[in-house]
Length: 302
Image 1 (cartoon, rainbow, N blue to C red):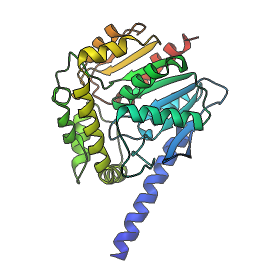
Image 2: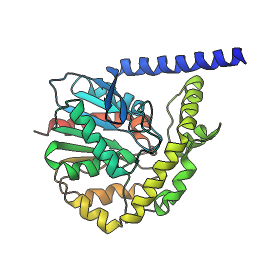
Image 3: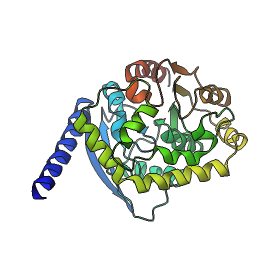
């Protein structure tokens, strides 16, 4: 048992070392910040004097989902990527409210405590997109632009099982060995190479956090009951910031038609960038294809 324990500990240490190497490769360093009941873990990189980009991950994700994209952003911008509450290494109390409105509000407290420039460019993937949208409606004068990547929402054009009935999102929770590979096969059309050791360690982490992921799914189900496509559209139509939309054409979680729906709702959205042969995770599947157009989009914003 002792040998097994030592082996497991060594694997975990190596996993953390690999993640630190990947963050360093992306020009990021790891930081922590206690804000009231939340112990935030986040990555930061780039020049503090440059405009700030805040990148938000999706359901079951972590800040490291953005590392491949961040590599191209840190030479030009100040980049902040938090582990959202109850994900990755960000710690919260057991009774923490994981609703989208509360996450948006706690994000604001984090931004204040970290003394970030309030004129942010915010990017959100999947659930992170829903948080970014809500944050932008609450603090419209402090958000300069939005990047929405396969963004969660309540869509008229929804035609996947996970949007028609969000309780099916429970099927995406990694709760036992083998679930991680099933999830990757579902959310990605074009999987990047992930070393076996990293896959095993990532699966272990997601299993440990599965109870919080279930709670998050409950909140998304509640959101889908509170909002209709019409009420969601009413909120989104109020946004005036420039918006860049990226979507994988083969997304099986949030179908690509939602990208067109968002474009038509938003006042100042560029034509969506639709990626052929890509699923729900463009930030991992096709970072080079999305980041150069995104940089060009950012350069046009005054």
